[in-house]
Amino acid sequence: MHIVFMGTPGFAVPVLDALVTAGHDLVAAYSQPPRPAGRRGRELVASPVQRRAEELGIPVRCPVSLKGADEQAAFAELGADVAVVAAYGLILPRAVLDAPVHGCLNTHASLLPRWRGAAPIQRAILAGDAETGVAIMQMEAGLDTGPVRLEGRTPVARKTAGELTAELAAMGAALMVRVLADLDDHPPVPQPAQGVTHAAKIDKAEARLDCYGTAAQAERQVRAMNPAPGAWIAIAGERVKVLAADSLPFTFPGGEGTTVDGLLTIACRDGALRPTLVQRAGRGVTSTAELLRGFPVPAGTMLV
Image (tube, rainbow, N blue to C red; front, side, top):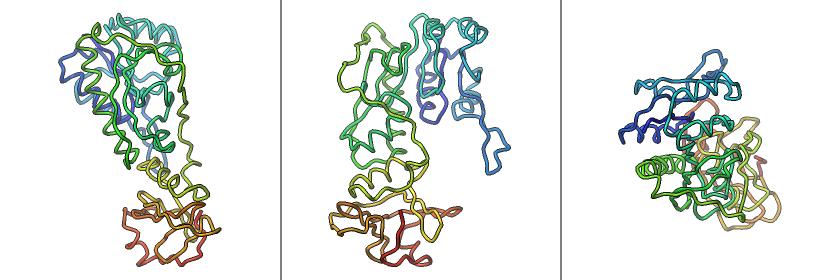
C-alpha cells in the first residue's frame, strides 16, 4: 500500500519500521516539529520518528497544525491508500481523516474503550489494571472513539511505563502489519458503550511521590513515572528520583511520608514503601544502599 505515516515519540518507531519491512510504500512521514532541548533550550531536536524516517529516506513533514486548507490539500495530494497513526500528538481534522482511500488507522496503547486519551500506559499502571494492550482503531472525529479492527493483550504485572511502552510498541507494530495485510479480514467493530475511561496527560505535579494512600498505590506511582518524569521525594531540600520500590505490608500508625528506619523505608497509610533504585539530580542511577552510604537519611525524616 501507499502509506502516510504519522507519529512522533519512540513508541511510534517500531510501527514505522514494521511497515517498511513489510514492503509498504511510505510516501511521507508526518511528525511534530523539532522542539527545544538541553538545559538552556537553545537547540531544536527532531523527534524520534523524524530521525528514523530520514534515516530510511522517507520524506518528512512537520506542520504545526493540520487545520489549514493548504496543509489539508498537501496531505490529500499524497494519494495515500491509508494513513497509519501512532502517538502523533496532533488532532486530525475531518478532511485529513477522509483523504486516504481506507482512512486513518491508529495504534492506541490500551484496550479501548478503557483509557482513551494521551497517557493510557501510565494510567493503566496507576489504576492497578491487571492487563492492558494495543488496539488498532479506525479513526473518526472523536477522541479515540473509532471502531477497533484488532487488539492484543498483555499483563501489566510489575512492569514500568518504559517497559510496557516498548512491549506495546512492538505488539502494535505486528498487529498493524496484520491488519494492513487483509483489511477485509479485520472489519471495524464499534467500541462498547460501557467501560469508557479517559487517560489525561501526566502532569509533572503528579510525579511527587504520594505516600498518603496505600503502599501499593505508591509503588504503582513509581512504576508509572519510570522513566519520565520520574517519581521523586525531597531529601534535605534536594529532589531524589525513585525509579523502583517495594511495597511492604507493615503498618506504621501515623507518620505518612516519613522514614521509619535508616533504610529509606517510607510510611504510607497502609504499609510502607522501600525505594530500591534512586537517582540524585545530575547523577547516575544507584541502589538505595549506595545512596545511603554517602547520604544518610535517619528515621523520622519527612520526605513527601
